[in-house]
Length: 329
Image 1 (cartoon, rainbow, N blue to C red):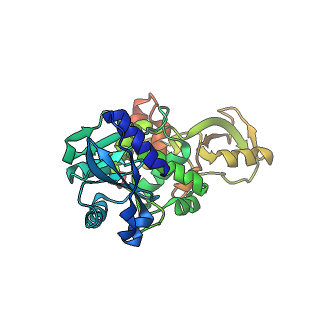
Image 2 (cartoon, rainbow, N blue to C red; image 1 turned 45 degrees about the horizontal axis):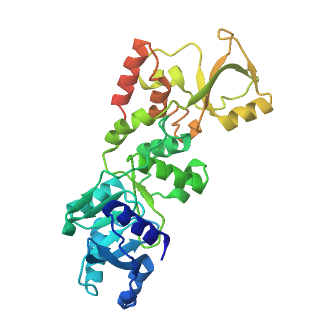
Image 3 (cartoon, one colour; image 1 turned 90 degrees about the vertical axis):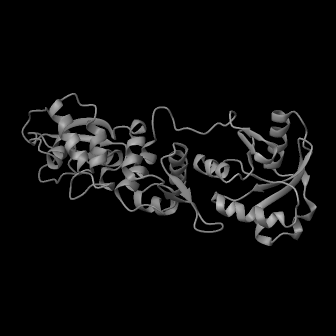
């Protein structure tokens, strides 16, 4: 018996107070090969009724319409109830499974068996992102997806675009999906899951905003070595003056990544300066590379908004509101 079958047996026993005595289904060999590759099949009893459990071993989550087709094929070899089992089912798919009255069990979390009048949802526990907000890598993925045509991109493609590892991008997709900001789909059997939005982009942004943090980790006032170009795009009030009617500040603000800030210091390319010193720059160190989303030397509007939204100045708040109204969702 595989791990999910063992968890299934424990869950049914703890929830319904009976031992289902789950065993491997011997007639599984009569099913099509692709079904046997994708699922483990186990028989047992729920409230004394013989049932067949179809445990999903796939890496990606199929839509309910596909699961229904698989159930129908299994029903040709089994006369009783067939129950779909998976370790984790996304919230939007759980809702669709219930709407289509497809029986399913998420061991330890949820049991929906309409043919037995069982609908236990109070035990469901969905993973949530850290209460402190999304990690910088997850925030970078979300902003990239909101600003660019990033749908249908998986961890490997995102890693190539954003400069993270594929593992980091997989973790980012996990966190974004747990927060129900994105969904992941697959283009075919065995393929890597890809990012998708299930709501308009502006709605996703509004839902995500409480979880998003300012990208600015530190601020410094510096002088660059003579004849050295700005090491990053303009940000802060400099960028806001570009995107709104706000007057440009006297001191230019630029943004760099942590890695670029480290290189600047190692190469002695910057010196500390006073705020009113001629030629001084306000330099922001960001948690993700500001160049990822910068356009023509200016940081993107979404990251800029996050970096300034806590500012008390009413002029800045009015300029931010004006800027966000012009975002092309």
